[in-house]
Image 1: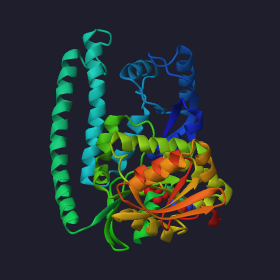
Image 2: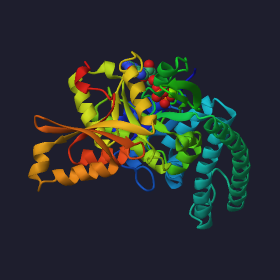
Image 3: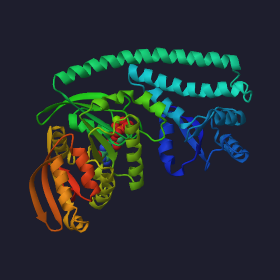
Image 4: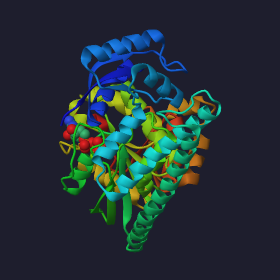
Length: 431
Ligand SMILES: Nc1nc2c(ncn2[C@@H]2O[C@H](COP(=O)(O)OP(=O)(O)OP(=O)(O)O)[C@@H](O)[C@H]2O)c(=O)[nH]1
Ligand SMILES: [Mg+2]
């Protein structure tokens, strides 16, 4: 593949590597970078423009890529100076999707998202044209801009109609599945976290995996037996930071599977820096929140633990449990702890779930004898089978309804305790 030589304008130096890989996926080779702390509302300063032109000349760059999104006004001003239209992060992501669209539906969605992005800009163009500030862009007059705007809208309506037809079909399919008693599990998470690798390991299939972002662009399914449950498991497109909501809803409409999921496996690459892990968890949950899916039962799967030692793993886990969902460490590639994962999945799919709660006994007693109220709260949420005092801690074996397990998890976590789903793993036993 021939890559187009380009200069990158970078606002986040620490994320340059991610951006380089992204650009490469879209067909660009970053020959040089220009670092800018912050963009001006008009775009770049004269000084930065001069720097940029110099870098373009010395590298023979044909394109200029921004690692952030640009407002129409910024795009126009910069284009006027450097004589090519700069591409922003969102356009680059859209190009990756366009290049790799694996299905009719994906293709339609990408078109829709691109048009949506164009429409937002067209609005701004119309506004600028009407105020006489920018009499047309790329030779468009105010009149043509209006026509162009209407045209985009028409094309969007027709795309939405086609997508709806496909969606209806899927709906029927889902209905059929449910009638036949299938449970739905959805694998989701940041791009490159290892979702497809996990999917392959669990299902024995051989879907394409790879170090580049967005290897998977459409939802893949398989059926699977987990304990007594017949499951429908799907692998989905990955998340990435800085996607505006309109792109998310268009791109991720295949993710609507999640809204019917009995369990969401949220995969995270545990081998990265703690900061990166935290950032990616936040992004993933933000996107799930934007799609209104955070209320779903989520199991965090900390993947790639073959790459870190047990001390690092402990640190990673302690960051992940802060998100107040159960966490299970695995290596999808080396099948570490996969059987445990399946057992936890089986438990979480059950109507009732056995959990073991660990609470710091002394601490609770010291806090105005919280202990009594905690126990009665737990009794409200489930049935206590056993209470044990071991050292500093108190352990309660409790059976709860599957709907209660998450509120219980959050409640106990906030008290400084821990909840383990029956057959949940002992982190210390891992090396
Ligand atoms: N060392 C190690 N590498 C892994 C593991 N799981 C996945 N990988 C690697 O991580 C990269 C990404 O894996 P994928 O399974 O394609 O990730 P994905 O989340 O499906 O990525 P997208 O579909 O692009 O969003 C690949 O190079 C995998 O070989 C693991 O457990 N350990
Ligand atoms: Mg994948």
